[in-house]
Image (cartoon, one colour):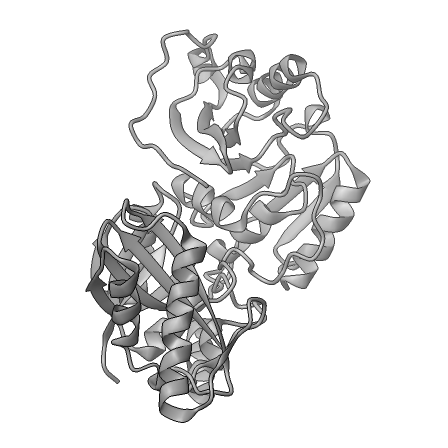
Length: 399
């Protein structure tokens, strides 16, 4: 099978983690861009990448590049592609357009113009035309316009890859699965210690942590990928890829635990974990983190997404102070990482973070922070957080 270029799209700032994932999978010619990583592979690798990548949102297969500054040239360029290779007149398609250009202002207009070009080509050649289906198309086409450069790609994934397929129940403010996986990878999680999410909500961080620890492909539970509707779909090859990936899973010899004080959250998390077939690795208890203490010996990694007042009604100052007190007094030998969009609230934790990474959770500016709780005498290292904190240069943008 021949190799071809592909593009994995991601959140700004996850490019290096994604490039590392691609290299470990066996991608060729990996190139880091902005919010994307380019690479080469064959059809089997395209299947493998969609199944395996934890920090990719979508994988595109570019098929054509051209330049255009006018609607007429755009139409002509789209007609320069032989669409019968990818589609027949009885099938459906949809076009997603992103624009960074002064020549074209409206993505909907570009999508409409490109649709006309495709439909007209079929009508001229066969007298029949494919139709548009926005919800369940046979072919999803991606058009990206940067100034006058237009790239046309096939969307190999379909719905965003954060739709893993295991989460059926959510609580008030669920975390995006790709964001959860990226946080864990930034925290250096490899499954070599115990892990606790003390405010686990619907269990997303727990599920992603278990899949990383056991090397289970991120999208093994997903219902479908766009490439399954393509003319060159190879079901046998896809099954072979899944078998090969599942042979690379590994056993996990530590514990992954989740707490939540809300009974409804615990129920939902348990349902999601069972759905993901991860209930052998994860235990979830109804507990208020502030009433707990470390239950394991040896190092503990804590990764969580505390409420930050945007959608939940809590007394933030008291809440963050109790978080700091609980970590400091009851969790020695622990590295704690959490994400928050309430930058003011960080002052109340009462500990100095050893790392601070800027990110965005949706449209909210956030920080991923790390606190190191030492065993025994080193605890004196804790000092009340000083005002002049240095922030890391790395800037992650989750939009």
